[in-house]
Length: 252
Image (cartoon, rainbow, N blue to C red; front, side, top):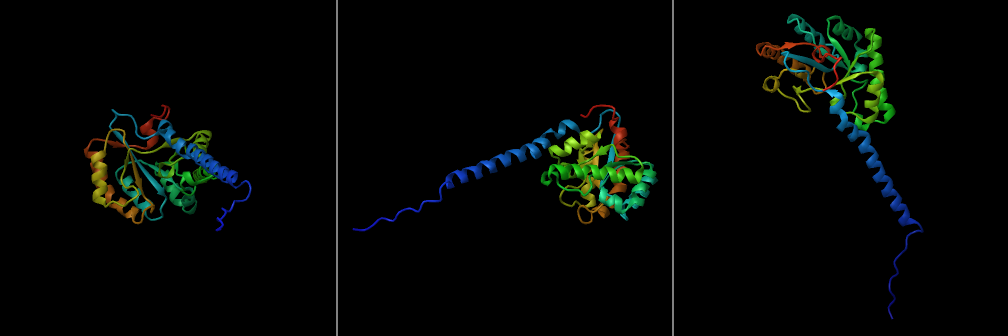
């Protein structure tokens, strides 16, 4: 008579162990969702994307600097038009180029915190996410003599720890309603067309004067003269974010 092949049983408790692994993985996904995506969903309620209508004003904001070459050129261009703007600076770059950082403030522009090293908040632990904001604020405060009051998260991405840190430091979170260039490069002509087509009263325009994307500063500088002309021709006045938002008001 032939003998059947017996199934090999796993070690005692194997099924329970697998169940616990799956349960832990599921709990981890739920926790991350609340920590990252849950916080992201609350961001529109606590951040500014645009200013009030009816005043014919817009805000030019510049991210990722300072850049030792592009930022001084941009400052000269803005000075020639008597325009003040807001610069969201990366702490690591500000520490590397403190003279450029001071030149921004000395020219009457507003400086905001764009974190210490420009990292994705969804990939950071609570301690690291908090440190990105606090160290960025400390570096700018040390250079300029006063801490920034504005904060812009890299890529507009936050988590629960970063939101808590922003509240603790009393920072105002500022996003944007128009972005000249996203994750893919745009030619100067395409940038001008995009911003002009979407320009509106109370707009917060997000621009980049440092190389987050390769060649971004050169593309921006090529775009700026015609962009400033377009703003003027539409009878808008460019002001810093703090002036646009009248920060005693509540976010909206």
